[in-house]
Structure formats: C-alpha cells, structure tokens
Amino acid sequence: MDSNSISNKLLDENMSFIAKPSIKWILKVVVLALIVCVGLYALFLQVTKGHLITGMRDNVVWGVYIVNFVFVLGLSYAGALIAGIFHLGRVKWATPLQRILKLITVFSLIIGPFYILLCLGRPERLFDLFLHPRIQSPIIWDVVAIVTDLVFCIVYLYFTYIKDFALLRDNSDKLNMPNWRKKFYKFVAIGYDDTPKQKKLLNQSLDILAAIIIPTTIIAYSLLAWLFGMNLKVGWHSSIFAPFFILSAVYSGVALLILIMWIYRRTRKLEHIFTDNHFKYLGFALMGLSLFYGYFYFSEYITNWYNMQKTSGLLWEKYLDFSEYGFYFYGSIFLVTLLPAIVIGIPWFRSVGSIAFTSVAVLVGLWILRYLMIVPVLETPYVPIQDIRPDWVHYSATWIEWSLTIAGVALFVLFFILVAKIAPIIPIAEMEEDQEEAKKIVSPKEEV
Image (cartoon, rainbow, N blue to C red; front, side, top):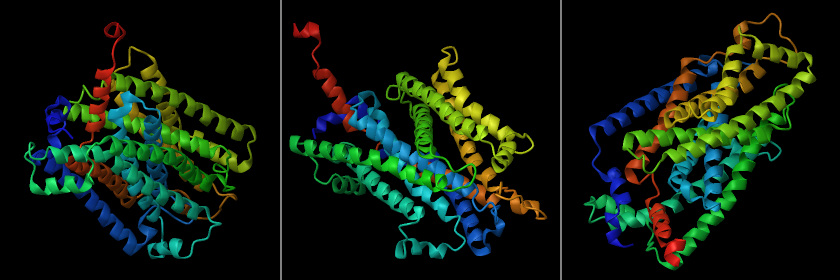
C-alpha cells in the first residue's frame, strides 16, 4: 500500500487506538474487569453450592440465564445477517457500519453460549454433548449450529481486517509504532499488498463467506426457536416461532447497532462517519421492524386467544394481571411496537438522540418479552399444583443470576474496548476505496 495514504484525513482521524492508553481508558477497563470478577465469584458460589442459591427450581428450571442466552444469540445472528446483506448488496453508505456488526456477531457468539452452561446442574457433564451426542436431540442441532456459525464469523471478521492490517503495517514507521505492534500487524496482514489479484481473491472470499453466513445464521436461530416450538407446552408450541425469532433478532440487532454508533459518535467525535443519514436510515428500519413485530405478535396471540383452553387461559391471566406480569407485558408491548412508530414516525420527535433513546427502549422491551416468553410459561403447569410451597412454583432471580447477567454485558463492552485498542473499529481501507471510486465517477457535465 502507498505510504502516502497515511496523510489521508480519514486515517489521521481514526488512529487514536495506537496511542498510549490514557488514565480514563485504563479506569474503564479496570471497572469492567471488576464487574466480570464479581460475576466469576457468583459463578464459583453457584458451582460449589448448587442451584439452590439461584431462583431456579423444579418447575421453573430456566430463568434469566436462558433469557440472556436467547437474547444474546439473537444479537449475534442479527449482526451476521445484516452485515452479510449489506456486503452482498454493495450498500456503500453502510460501509462504516459493517465492522461493528461483525464484532457484535463474534462477541455475542462467544458470550451467549455461556449462559446456557450456567443452567447445567452438573457442568462436568458438558463434554458428554460431544462425546456421546444423540442426533435425535434438538440440543445437538443447536450446538453444531452455534459452533459452525462461530467459526465462519471469526474467519469473516478476520478477512475484513486484512486490508487495515496491511495499511497499518506499511505505515508503522510513520506512525511511530512500538516493535510489538509492527510485528503483530506484519503477521496478521499475511503478506497482503493490495495487488489486483490479491484484492480480487479477498473480495471473492468475503462474498463466499457472506453468502454462507446468511443462511447459516437463519438456520441456527431457527433451530433455537424449534427447541421451544417442538415442545407441547402452552406458550411455546407454535409454528411461527422460527420466523418470529429471526424478526426479533434483526430488530434487536438494528437497535444495538444504533446504540453503539451513537456511543462512538459522541465519545470519538465521529459525526462525519456516523452521519445523521445513518441514524435516519436505521431509524426508519427500526420503525418498520416494530410494525412487523407488532403484526407477528398480534398473529401469535390472537390465534391462542381464539382457541383458548384451560392452561392457556391461566397463562393469559398472568400476562394481563397487573399483580403478576401485566405491567411488564403492557410496558414491553409499548416499548417494542408503539414507541418507535411515535418517536421516529413523527418528524417533530425524530432526532439522533431520540433514535438512540428509542433503540435502548427497544432492547429493554425485547429482553422483557423474552423473559415473558420463558418464565410465566414454566410457572404455568399442565395440571394445577396444590399444597406446594409458592417459591417452588414462582420464579424470582437472585443476585447470583443478576450479577452474572451484568458480567456478560460488561464482558461484551470490554471486548469492544480491547479490540478497539488493537485495530480500528472503522473499516478505513474500505472507506478509502469507496472515496477513490466516488472521485473516479465522471459527472455528465464533465463527460461532455
């Protein structure tokens, strides 16, 4: 690569990651690491004392852990799906967003499966899934799907970094990098020199990976949905769970992308990269997804209501009763279906800040709906249980579960901070190529 390209304004503005860590940066890392350590302590207590110190019991065998598992995996699959579509569709305005989507995918795929492991009463038996698998079990399908998707997504993410690694390698002396960085970028650039042949091969590889990842993510999250849908339990047995899960994943992925964009825009002054138009486009996508989500939600529950049976009636009473889950049910429906349409659909309310706020509300609402999809269903047995302690039937998460939940969020943020210190969050080389292609386009007047 041409060393003169380092003078490009885009490069100069996005090289802060090679600077010496500031006190503020170190403080963030320490705080996040402490939160993760508290989660590890909670995990130690759970392993040594058993699930008795959690809110999970014989009836509600799943709780916040499974809610987090379903929600986080949805974020990962959404990141891969959206990034793949943007890449294959050659959506130029989405170039600055692609790497964030891929990082969301990989980090979520690493963190998400740990939540399912927290539900195991005998974690040492985990290896039996690999040593003695039963292909008849949907759990095995999910394990194979997650591992396969993780491998493809890590390779995909690495391939998108190769051009930037080569750019940093070629300009390491001008940037006064320490020796370890020079050796690192030289190693990970794998000899890429941006020759026409290398560029063609890399682009073809990215196209193939994107084409593979899109159906892989759809299949993987559908398998997770079928784990619930193939159960005869009221509230889960549904034929539209798979498309409903895919829609929910894309919805939450767009919301998280908006939030991360807003954070980087505010903290790193990247208004010229994450522009108002980016927020406007993604905001309209958020509004459209909210309408689709409302339609799916209405379709699912109107059929259950019309064919109401005794057990489903008990479940619906819990959803509508404010003394049980009514507040969460109505509140989440408002956050997920109505708020985006109001804030983004009405121009007077629409702004970068309001769109970012709406994305946070959507993420909260979708997490609550995942909670309502799991916990109230498990609290509603096929046959009414009599003469039993209420805390055996009703679920309430303990500090152990909440600390591990917060530790997962902290670990996700920590991954972003650490990776952003090694390599750029913005695909600099790709954006430079887009700018060069735009300059080569001859306007009709100039052509005449």
